[in-house]
Image (tube, rainbow, N blue to C red; front, side, top):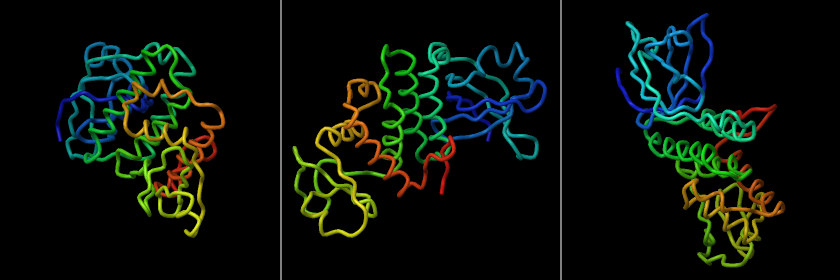
Length: 248
């Protein structure tokens, strides 16, 4: 499986004294891990490119017996020095990357995941005031793009458009319903007001470049968080536990 393409670096760790292991997101193959032998010392094959969240053009080769992948060389396409120098931005990027790795991406969903993470890193690197809720929006959008869709404009039972009314997430079914229909359904439900529902709809429809416009009041932000995290925990099986994302 030898190939060359642009990738985004998700994690870089020490393997031996001068060797590194690198986890990256490929736009055609999903999340992969490879070893960069001599990666921490090489001045020819990996010139200044093996830093977290860089966009790098890599050449990847299988080992002799195909037991693992090795980075043969890398060329820096775009770095994110501002992001890495700002703890707030770095924390948001790390949270998104951690969720992405826990979620897992195969070749089928690779292109959408790559585009989403690339746009998210660009926002964190370039925007003056990236939204604090960016990791939350990222989790929702990744789930939506990978097949966990939510209809955010009308009741999944009667088809009524929500307009300025509250919507109720039927947690067991993973769908929104109006107040009347939700009252007859079993299981837990989570209410979402019109402003929070609009924010969720825009998160689904717009690229991260526009998420900075979603300035939500604290109460509205809490509504979004309850719905998004509840939905992802129940249907995707990922929750935040002891400082990290885990699958249950």
